[in-house]
Length: 203
Image 1: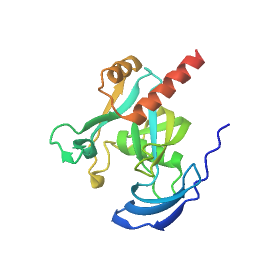
Image 2 (image 1 turned 180 degrees about the vertical axis):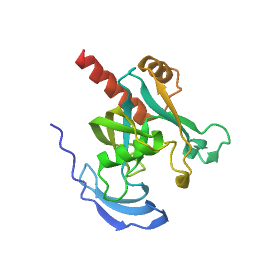
Image 3 (image 1 turned 90 degrees about the horizontal axis):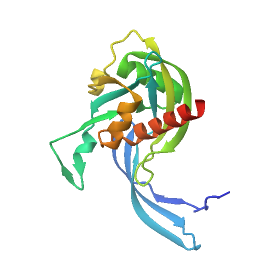
Image 4 (image 1 turned 90 degrees about the vertical axis):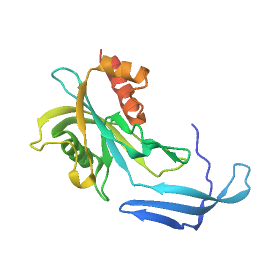
């Protein structure tokens, strides 16, 4: 078994440089111990955005999977430049946890807000960092089944500028879309691989 090294971290200066709502950008000065035992320090940009959840929602009646289409502005940025083309992403249902909110409660809330559906038979696949070189975000990734109408329209929250279109897509279509680069969202690909593994072991 591998045991991770104790880097004996010391925060010399947290230095938050920007804050908006739950999100904080730090330019932190950090001291730590290298693998060779030497002490070192450096400054690092850390985006603290809280934790998130995501769910691959599957419909029992036809085995189709719910993907949501929405505008994702960060996909317009590339090495210091912003492009005015693109921005649309196909992905599984996801959202940020409120402080103190349990992941499963957040999943149910996000499914209702984004799709107007209820969810049952939640199964946690994993909890993982999405981009540990830059962001604090850990995401709890779930599989679940559609459980009918939630009594709200879905499509996202107007106050959060969400504009969401819902697609129910077959497993074979999603395989092809991943292979052709039409689905490029990491959590979606991870959840889909988890579903394929579950289906292969249940047959």
